[in-house]
Image (cartoon, rainbow, N blue to C red):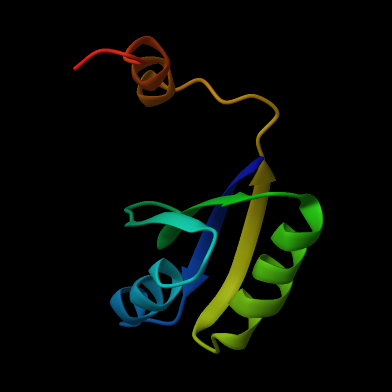
Length: 92
């Protein structure tokens, strides 16, 4: 599994529209509208780098309102949610 964070700048007033389009895409698990240097942050999980490339370079590129992206591929994932799932196996 490839976990990726994509930082995006979008055209003024388009953050909600772009966020909704991104959230519908397979592989995009979450999209956040944020304050600061970027407008949106997308969390992406794909099976391999080829699927990641198809999504970010291909599908994201079809959204005209995206002005720029910066993609960060995670080496390791540290998540409370993953740990909770692991320790809750067999518990009701």
